[in-house]
Length: 370
Image 1 (cartoon, one colour):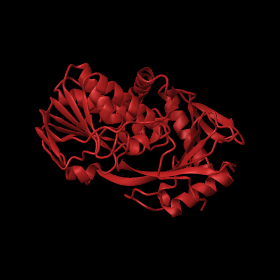
Image 2 (cartoon, one colour):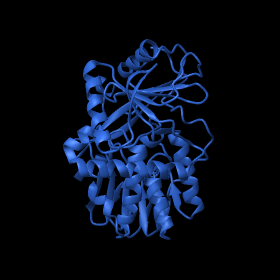
Image 3 (cartoon, helix red, strand yellow):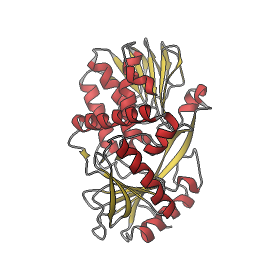
Image 4 (tube, rainbow, N blue to C red):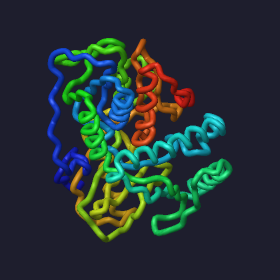
């Protein structure tokens, strides 16, 4: 396997970031948010919009988990393909959920327009069975007047979703963190929550006294909140990226083989590829040779990319058996969000805003859909 110049460093970590201090001593706030990824920062900004004091903690760093180490896709919908969501949740609920994510895509773009590019996305079929499944998805979405088109092009055959896009996920998290700080939030890195209730969060060197807590972490959510052990399971996503190349041209993000493999080409020509979660290895942090070898073979043989590999990385991500993410009050005044099943950039931001309203005991009728 080709040696990486940047082992376990995501491609996205290409801009300077001044680390935030760990929490030391005691602080007070109306709400404490545990997790400074996209969902936690979305929650914090919503709290601040309501004039509420807020503290944010992260065990690692801003965007240090899956929020800053994913494929950078901005996709409408839930993890299940739309026709599968209709079968599981009913047509009315599935359409309402999909529509919420379309609105959230617009909100994400409006919040960080300089980081978001929306050329659409492609689902490409790699087998006749998957082509048939694409047709089922196309029919279900057309029946509900949702944006979809059949696609045939250099990438293969499948479906085009015109509303989707891409983002540098780590740059987005850092931009949101700076905005939250500018609006008065106190943020602390390297401050894992060792224990929490609705009024107190303990870290190794400090504590937060508050009137409510939102736990906004995806991977390993069930470790911090054992109540969710039967609902959420953590798996490991792995990715690699290449040096800039012009030997291929992928104008849109692509996912294939039922969504297991996914890739995009950045403006500078770098190709970021992830996948083969089903090839082995769960609940680990470091990239594994088995999965990385499969990714490298796919890069060379399927995508036709010969450029050297410069980055390899991994991240823990939460999956649910239902395909619905978690939005739940797991303890009195402790709300949990996570289990995005690989689609956290959009659905996580949406649930972060809903969780903020729930933590403030404000109306959030959309929450009933989850």
